[in-house]
Length: 153
Image (tube, rainbow, N blue to C red; front, side):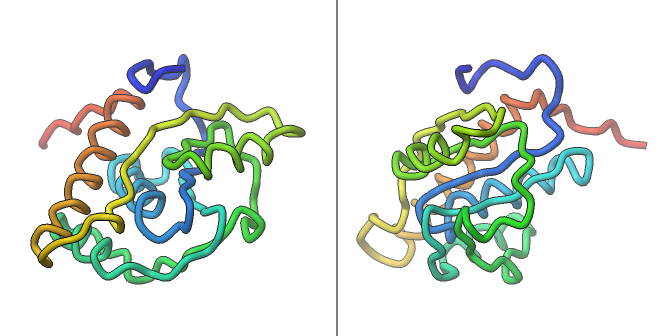
């Protein structure tokens, strides 16, 4: 399935996965939760559990999302593995998700997403890289799940 296609019916549980579960996948999880609330279960994991990233926290705080309570976790740390879809955001996570799903009926979708931790420069340049990742993930999630803003009133 390409990133522009919408599922025939909304998934009930989605896992976002990246390398360390400290930037891309928790951003995607937090954005999806903000958009869809509890109508879809969202979680995130990494190939390895990394450390919380202050730039990721700052980029999300700019749009009113508090990720300070997020604790990075690995696939092995997941308490529930009954996902309909795993969206992978790094090549390493995609490979791990395919291994993880050999015995499970789970769709795996790959959204190549730049790792903003690799960007060097001033604080503003580095933060801009995180903002670009955040905004790109937001657009992909909205397009993929055909999000429509709730009408006012």
